[in-house]
Image 1 (tube, rainbow, N blue to C red):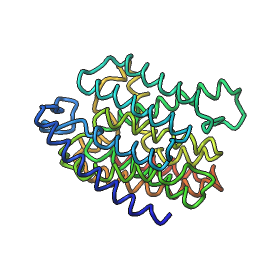
Image 2: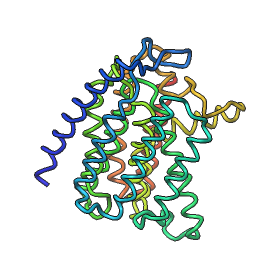
Image 3: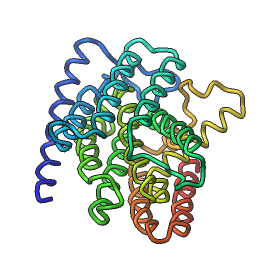
Image 4: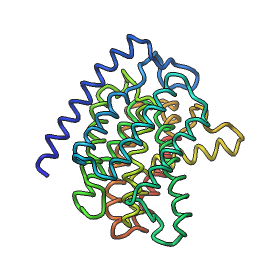
Length: 323
């Protein structure tokens, strides 16, 4: 594993350089995210950073998987590429929510039908078909929540680094429990390179072309961990994102609002609206996530206690954001 550090450095540099070059191209073509009443930024900013980040992640995954690519990666990598293509079209033309959802569901359904490494997530407690259906819904929801939560500078980078890095660290500690550490590290390293440009004040946004496929890849890694029996660990690592997105969706749904429309009601958005900076809010999320990574490790031996601790951490973070 001595190659992991230089490989990560290479990915960070490649991502940072590619993002900088892409930013120039997006500016020249006026592919910009203009501020509106629901935005958290104040000036037109290039969007579409995923065009640099996602190919680097997929190349890193493919190189590790070998030639020919393993059967598992032969499903996951094209699935992420297909979602990136669909999401780039959405970035440019704003596709109907139904088209985006059908496309995401189709990719997830195809992946689950071809992958052997995911499931049963519920360890045989449910019939196999029901298990697959619930997993499909969970995966599609995770893809969308990762996209929904990309609303302030740096937040997606912080979350992807936390989840990817956390999965990698746990894989190094317990090799048989998690996907290979390189998969999580590649995502974390690529997003660190992107974060150089996306930290407040952001000079480029990730766009759906980045957040959707990265959500798909992280969802795959988390579901694989859950299928290996470490469901509590897989739940704890993204718990802040899960809680913020789900609670906000339920609140808006209860009021009869169209939940797929852009808004400014997430807890992290309330934090910024309350006067905290993007950087301070993301720093708090990172601090909480580091505690969640530690609790994800203890969950391997004490799942119930670790889940309770993780829930307490996330509740405190959400209350702080709303205060």
